[in-house]
Image 1 (tube, rainbow, N blue to C red):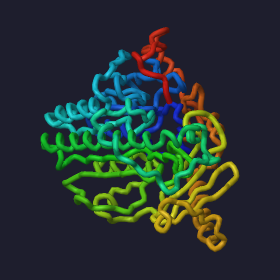
Image 2: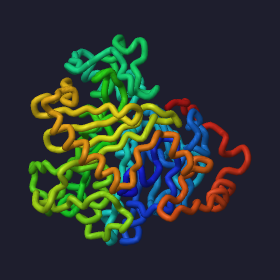
Image 3: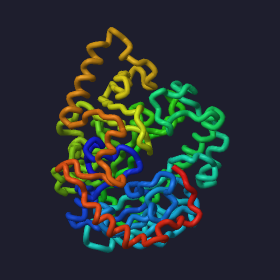
Length: 439
């Protein structure tokens, strides 16, 4: 949303509300005259762990905290249960979806595209599906797709381990019964992904049917992968390939050659400037990511030598001990932990499952020093001082990010006016239907 790194926004755990002081993707789109739409999971509003089922934590009021998505809105802040799931429009009345969530959200997206095809202004729609995501029970996936994998035996990775990585946070450590459930969990994961494949196909067909495909940039990507026991971890938030190497697929028949492949090293902060440039929209000066549009369109232009990664702390709580920094180039992955400065270096071509840590090989000392220096230099340039997770609490008040660029606190009186207007006493503390409490 910001084109910035976490060390610049302070968004280091899930339970923080992103401040509208940042010039975000939606702001740039709206300023350029785009009809914006947002459908699905938001996860940038609520700040009460364990109480995501309350209306005040699920409904993002119209206004600045929608970060520029000022037109169509059918979203919720947080939910991982995909039957009878909630959503909100422009008031705090919760709606419960009757369909399996991604199917219903895709219907809404197609309806948005149908209307957009009749209007003159350009449009930008973000469809943020929740799956694939835990809980992995068979009751959390469409039965048709669960059946596809019922008799499929999915092999565990060669780097699978039942010994929890000591650098895991509490969400990533393997539970006691993990080995008994992981194979069934993976079936649910693949079934959820298969359903998204089908829904993505529906969107592609809708663009073609409405005559929009030729001049529409369609992007499919993800925020993270899943470990499923690789390296003694489950979940996300790590530099290993299973979590960090995600798809970024682009279809734009007018400009991008079909089935072309780019080896450009792209990180999450690069997405916003790259897409804005492809749309001929000015990139905000505050953006820290790189415009890689020439690499994606024609596989030309200068390319970054590495993509940098930041692991700022625990998934959803202020807890220290799991922080890391890392980078990846077209051959190697480098990582370093904050706790004891332990380093890891993997040759992804020779060792795709990252089982051999070259940082322990004395013959690779010069190679290790090379990547160590690149990472340290970048952190200095980025003003990333490699702090523990709780250090960033000094940037927050009521868990709302405060200004970092100018060193002045965000005016929280504006936020209070918003919450007082939309969540009078008792209303916001009501649960959203039967939505379960979960993380």
